[in-house]
Length: 194
Ligand SMILES: Cc1cc2nc3c(=O)[nH]c(=O)nc-3n(C[C@H](O)[C@H](O)[C@H](O)COP(=O)(O)O)c2cc1C
Image (cartoon, rainbow, N blue to C red; front, top):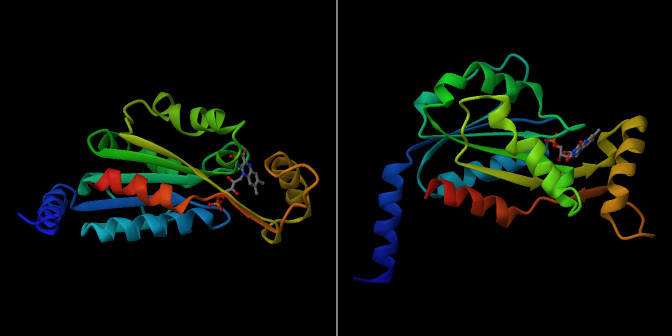
């Protein structure tokens, strides 16, 4: 049997397993939307159906039980997920406990080697303790974006202080710092839908 045919049949077998994927997320400055978009493109490459929903105030919550996999994510600000994805988890906890769930955050600290383990613990690993019944099959800590033109003066000063330690001493802070690793994001999705 040819290698190409083997790959085709392997891929087909996987597709029949993961048919419907839901990606819901919260964002404040937009970087998590771009991450979610790349995730849904990657899911589609595997032939699965994907619904991608930016949970904003008033967005109706989808029903997790209609999906084979539910991916829930948020950008982090001052140590917090956005309110709406947390409300989604809280409201849909019972059906989420019967569904495969994966969690991700887009976080500035993910781009800082000194802060990575703290960020993983605080933003992801402690979610099941906060939401008993939630049992993610996988989590991803994704590097965030700092884009100073999007911030007011107060936030600009606060964020400059955060990122100072993430660039070599003496170097000027650029207008935009982007710690997202697109290969890592695609690889994470591939291993989830395979
Ligand atoms: C005011 C402010 C506070 C932030 N606080 C944190 C923080 O506590 N921890 C962290 O990991 N990243 C922090 N970040 C970085 C964000 O996580 C990063 O900008 C991320 O890309 C935001 O996602 P969003 O664009 O989807 O809102 C902060 C960014 C801003 C602007």
